[in-house]
Image 1: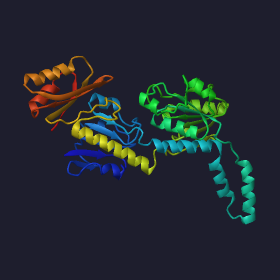
Image 2: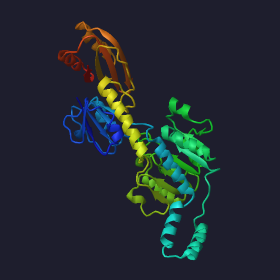
Image 3: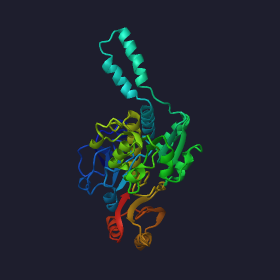
Image 4: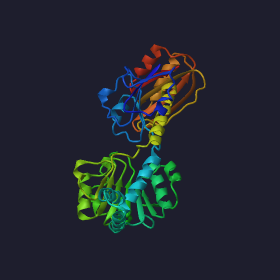
Length: 390
């Protein structure tokens, strides 16, 4: 029986994927095999030695100590693309809010319209039109930074609205490139995109290469008065740089899903309370996706959408399964196969893949692995974690 400890409120649709005859799921459960969470900040000391995997029901994993998990052979899963439509729709709303002061206009009518008779209300509304007029998105230039699952959808939406769309993503994958419309003009660097864009929207994870991507050195590259939208992560944009851009007019408006104290009270800032993936559909999609991945990993050792281990899968063809992780150094697999050969254990099928400094292996063998065999494999220098899946 596998045990899964949950944090936060996980969608019931995701939890229902775990069959009751194979899994125990609870927020308070001892020696869990896996953890499933959303925004809960996980500390290394929270992760017990029994944990084999962590599932993040969302895209970002900055609330998980990924490096520590990797060192311990714990696979960290996320749900890329599961919340893409929700974020895309919020990006569209942000673009509309940036060009037409819809929020201000609504609050004006709510506040000033109280107690007015029909004639007075009519005059108020007609007068408000002049104050809250705006511009259209059609014909403007949209710069999309990050062209993954979310960014590509935002770019496509911009094209549908009649906008000219520029895109920048130095790490664009082949899969993402296939998704991207030919009408999106690829920029070679951030400076070129910023100089030409009326609206810039960020859709990037927080990595060393993207942390404070929008910084003081880039502020002067913005087209004067441009709108910046950040629905990705707080740390992608440096707050001091944003304040500088707002002060000198390079940034006309800043719409962010990650309000910070320094930006409060600034009329040019539209703070949004982290609504990017906060739709029923997105929460369900993320939970279902991560649940499926955890189940396949716990039952078969397969890995899909891990942020710290390679994608790898092997169909079950009978026999008994061993899955193990190791440091990505030469001759590791040879040593493991030698241990099996010394015990005259025949290999039915196997697969091996590496990612950065770690590797992961799935081996199907003819006979049930003994405790002694597992101990022999664990004793090999460089092996991180060994699992047996009957």
